[in-house]
Length: 140
Image 1 (cartoon, rainbow, N blue to C red):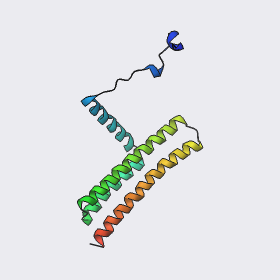
Image 2 (cartoon, one colour; image 1 turned 90 degrees about the vertical axis):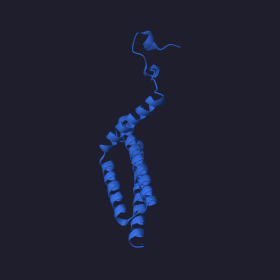
Image 3 (cartoon, one colour; image 1 turned 135 degrees about the vertical axis):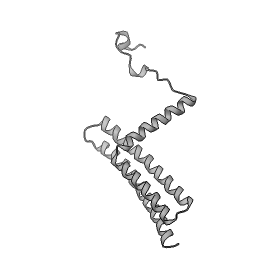
Image 4 (cartoon, one colour; image 1 turned 45 degrees about the vertical axis):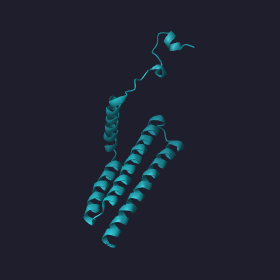
């Protein structure tokens, strides 16, 4: 079966466009570039900038209360997880806005669910930081 656009001399359909995947070391550099582009996009979000401030502030507070290496690692892992979920939430919001610019229940639900995922990690991070600070300051 042939494509009508190709027969009529029109542009080829997008599905027939071949994308050359990079392999080996070139793939590693391409992936790093894509990650950097994602980070630059995420920094434009005020919520992410607030989370970055919370991360730096948390590290300072942990240092002041004398947190041990595992407490620092736990905090860093939880924050990296929150940054990841924030990135996914931003991706969901971008896709919903692109696909369905009008207000819709499905679009609103998708955005609300992404927001709830971020909220859960904010609570987890806050609870962990609270535990570390209280255990170091009051329980010695």
